[in-house]
Every structure is written in structure tokens, then in C-alpha cells.
Amino acid sequence: MAKKDINKDLYSQIDEYLDDKSKQIKQFSRGDIVEGTVMDVRDGLVIVDIGYKSEGIIAGRELKSDSLDWTKLVPGDKVLVYVVKPEDEEGQLILSIRRTQQASAWITLEKAKESNDVVETEVVEANNGGLIVEISQGIRGFIPTSQLDATRVYASGVRQVGKDISSKVQKRLNSLIGEKIQTRIIELDREKNRIILSEKRVTQEGDAEQRDQTLRKTKEGDVIKGTVSGITPYGIFVNAQGLEGLVHLSELSWDKVEDVGSLYKVGDPIDVMVIGISDGGKRVAYSVKRLQNDPWSEAISQYKVGDIVEGEVQKVVPYGAFIRIGKGLNGLIHISELSDKLVKDPSDIVKAGQEVKVKILSISSTERHLGLSLKAVDQENAEITEAREKMSDEELSEAVEEAITEEIK
Image (cartoon, rainbow, N blue to C red; front, side, top):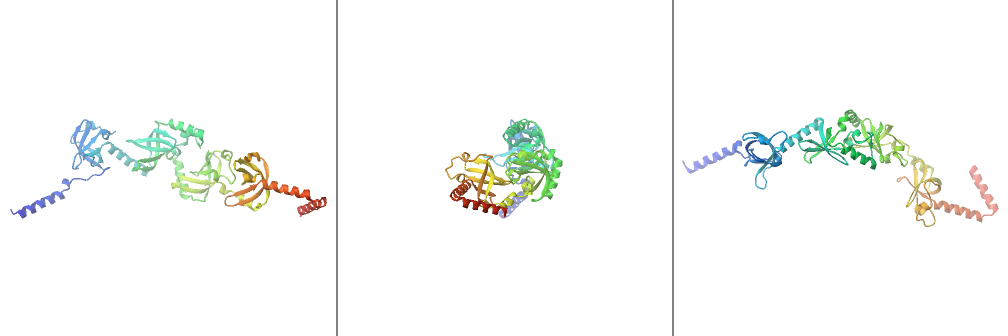
């Protein structure tokens, strides 16, 4: 046979070999799950053929599995394995039985999230934010305190906030370690190994349906009826037709709120305006004061710069004193306006609860603020007294008569 024909026949055989997929070296990536054949089982080591250029090794903790006892494997057995590394530093293919089971668990959890199935968890740790729970196959998730049924967290069954409350809540959370909790998945990210769960989505299933209905038909600016579901130092929680949200302290009243508990108690009916919905309804902001008349509008129509008005000292601070003129109308006497003498401590001049006469120096509608002066009133009184002392009896009598005439008019 001619040399040319021999080469042609050789190239043809090579092409046929390359086209035969059964003879090609398979390519694998980290995370692939494939079926392999057990080639050998040694002490703490299983060698598996998955059709790669070299046989794979399963060793150490990668052999651990709740559903498969590796010590009972024999050559020829078929086994599902997870590709940890196509090649390590020594060029070996590293496989895992343990991670195959874990990957399968992730797939199960993804399906559970899609179908909104109940997932059983076991509490393994507690921290300030909630509970860390074991789900399955070494996979852990997190239940925020806000997503736990309130009866587990608060003795009263009502959400509360405060230093004393926080320590009590932590003790109650710690006592849950070892307990099993039924949950639903609200967030799942396999790449970040992040799972957020909710017990409330199970225990308050009826509320969840109502919440979803309310969320679909509610928009910012709507006014809806609800009930007070929690009291905190920074506002109140309101459950409005299943949609729970916060009325922040600044949105409770046009007037300054010193004690939230004096205004509301849990269970009180309340009308609120929706002022914010974010994160798909996870965060809802309500307002009460926007349903009330703004006293500031009336105030600025009654007063003007230069007026002398009566007020009550509400609070004394290092830089001055806050004065309440009327409902929803407060102002500040700066330390420089307390006296025409040097003032080091405002409490030397005024005290909380004291009635004072002050002069309006400025009105800021944008900042809802009055600039007030105490010394200006004293100066005017001093000027009037001085003027009277200089007037003759006849002039003083005429001035009084003019004042009376003006008052009658």
C-alpha cells in the first residue's frame, strides 16, 4: 500500500475516534452533579470514575452523608457525586457525596419557595436580630425577630422596644434553642448561601392573605382603618387590614409628642394615611398627623414679627429655652435673647413650666420655627417705664385717655 494511502487511512481513523463521543474526555466544572462508577474503596477513601481524564477521589468529610453509607460501597456501584475541583494542585479530580446531598437540598428549598411550602427548621443559635436555624444537610437559615410569632418573643404577645425589653427578648430567644419551628421561605440566594425565613407566614396565614389583598389595592396617599398593634418609644405599629406598618414619632402629631403611651394603647382603632410602601410591602410607613389640620397654618395667620405673646417654658437647654405659644406652635429663645446681661446658664433665667412674655423675632414657615426674645420684652417695658417717668401728669392723663379710646374703637 502506498504511503499516501496509509496516511489517509490513519487520518480517517483519528477523525472517527474524535467523532465518537464515548471516547471523548468529558469536561466538568465545579458544582456539576454526575453519576460515576465506584472503582475502589479504601480506608477513608473512595475512587470513582466519571469519564474524566483521571479518576476522582472522595475523602474526609466529603464522604459524609445521611442517606448513603460509603463503607458499604463496592467496586461497580453507581453513585451520584458533586464536582468540588476538576483539578487540585496535584492534578487530581476532587469529588463529594456530602455536597451532592446538600445541592439536592437546595433544589428542594428552591421548589419550596416557589410553591410557598412549609419548611421545618431547628433553632441552633440566637442573637440580637433573631434565630439561626438548621434546615437540612448542613444548610442554615435566619429568622429575624420581626418574622417570629410575637407570642414567642414578647410576654404580652405585642411587639415592644426598649432597653429592658431587649434583654428580656434575648432571654426568650435563647430559650428557643433546640426547638423546631415551622416556617416559609421569604428570601433565598444559593450563591450567597443566604436563606431568610418567616414563622409569621405560617402562623398568620389568614393575615397574610388579607395583607396581600390590601397591598394590591393600596397606594400612597390612601387613608385606611386599622388598629394599634404595638407601642415603641419611636412610634406605633398599626395593622391596617393585614398590612402592618409604622407611624413614626414625627408622624403622630403636629405637636411635640413626649410620651407615645399616653396617646395610644394596643388595640385602639385608628385611621392612618399611607405615606410609603417599599420592598414589596415589607416596609410600610403610615401617618396620623397628615389627617389633622396643621395648627402652624393658623398660627402664622394670627401672629407677626414684633408681636409680644404669652407662652410656657417647655424645656431649658444649654443654648436657650423652648417655649410653647399654643397647640402645635413652639419657638426658641436663644441664650443671647434671654437677657441683656451675659447668661452662662439659661436655667438661671427661666424654668420649665414658667409663664413668660416673649417677642416674636422671626417666623420660618419652612422650618416651622419661631425665633423669640425675652430680653426684648424687658427692654420695651423699661423704655415704657422711662417714658412715663419723664411725662407730666397732664401728658400721662392724655396718653391713658387715648389708650382707652383706642381700646373702645
